[in-house]
Length: 196
Image (tube, rainbow, N blue to C red; front, side):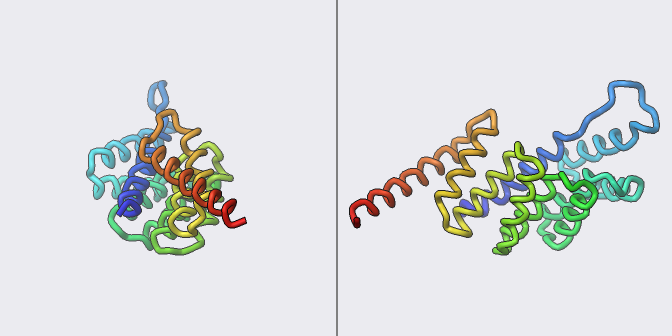
């Protein structure tokens, strides 16, 4: 159950991160500002829960600005939120194609693979971390992957710790998971000493 709640939370984190990357020019609007203005408008619609309208706005942007990765990323988030993993994967990969440093989109692909039990998620998480080493959500999701899918608590522990170090606020759930994994590790270490 914690895993399902985690996936929903991860998608919401992706949405918030995608939303926080928008920048607006403080100068008077001109034609060069239009992609930023349109993107901000689409994000506002998305944040208001009007996902169908936001989807239309992002799709229109992909036609006018096909090399911009933000609209593709948000279309992936919308599709994932609707449960359409195939479409979400296509959009996220298009975002990465547009911007090979788009850690949000890479993490999106990884989460989709993770949900399907596909070990290819590991590669996508690692790509996201390589592209943007200070992107905490990639570490958080990778920790979950190591803990739940690969059953490697020591690796999970290191990625949870990295996530905590990158976030300004301490996530109490993650802190509890770290404590739980430290206790498991301590118990395993004690058992190894006793058996020797």
